[in-house]
Amino acid sequence: MKREAYAAARTVSPTLEAYFTCHRDAALRRGQTHVAPPPDAATIEGIIDSAFWASLRREEGYITRISLVYLSPEDAPEPILFERPLPLDPATLTRLSPAVERPGIHLGVWRHEGELSIWGATRAIPLLSFVVEVTEPGLLVIKHHNGEETRKFINVAVLEGDHIKIVDERASDRPDSPVLMRSLLQLDFRDRNSKSVITVVRLAVSMREHGRGGTLLIVPADTEAWRESILQPMPYTVSPAFVQLAAVDPEMAAPTIALIGGLTAVDGAAVLNSRYELLGFGAKILRQRGSPRVEQVLLSEPIHGSTPALLHPDQIGGTRHLSAAQFVQDQRDAVALVASHDGHFTVFEWSPTDDLVHAHRLETLLL
Image 1 (cartoon, rainbow, N blue to C red):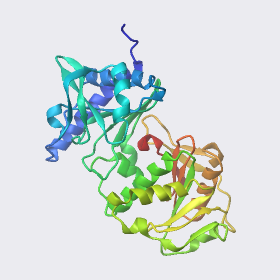
Image 2: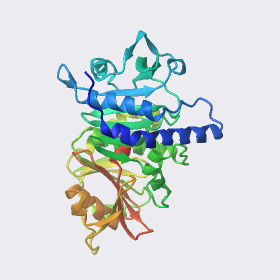
Image 3: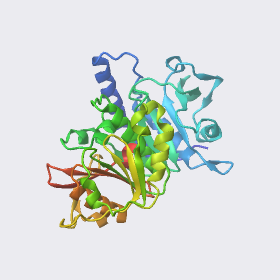
Image 4: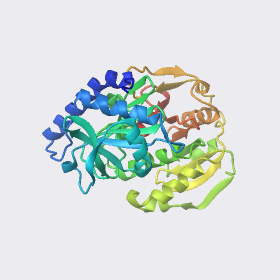
């Protein structure tokens, strides 16, 4: 029986076709050669439609989590090839999902005899490969490979039911936009502290993954002024500072990042200095003596159509958000990362441009 079409797939497909075509042309002009072919709108619609309906199905009680990449088998290094291509339909995807639900594994989709089919699976994919990831029932993330193994995929759009969020790449053009956001938005992002940027991105992902909510404060390494905004003594002071995260290469740091990400789940905030040395966790944030209460923050999200809004911190979230905003208002060289138990993720930084705390909502980039 013919299933109902997923309307959001048709709505978003022309925009995604234009995005991938534009970025492929730009990559070729930069001299890059191993670039994935851009899908047309009909292909995008077909892949998203099948992925959406698969996300609503279950296999032996488990929800479907799967990643699809539009790629020919000839362009995939060392792929697992099926003897015969399988139909791209929700039932097939649901049956295959237990085998490929772990991160970094993609089912390959290409046209066979004019129909979209699943040819096998692969781990390695070229730059700008069109990827659709099913993360939860009804929640799809469209993303692509940026060509660097150490960086997270770049998210292009998030579809949740009939709600469509298209990521605004130009949000990173703002002079005081967080380095974390610029890294997650820009395909050709380069930063002299790229090791630190990779570390922060992975810490942010780890904080979201444990699902308990948490706060991470990153404070200057050359001053102790931040302690004036923390109830002393910290419940779990680390002495001497734990330097393992600063010492290891980001490629080898996964266990350490998981450890520190887990510490943010403890009531209070974990504290790192700008050298990424762990100073403690469970820290209780206080308003610095003589400082005014934070009354307004500027909230923005790098999504097309969204408008920055001046809000009281209570309107953004709970106690974590209020205390993080207060900390950054008092300690303007610090950064506060806040993960909510519902999946929201906010970076608080002081904005010299606006002369107030800027709250950047970034969960759309971290999915």
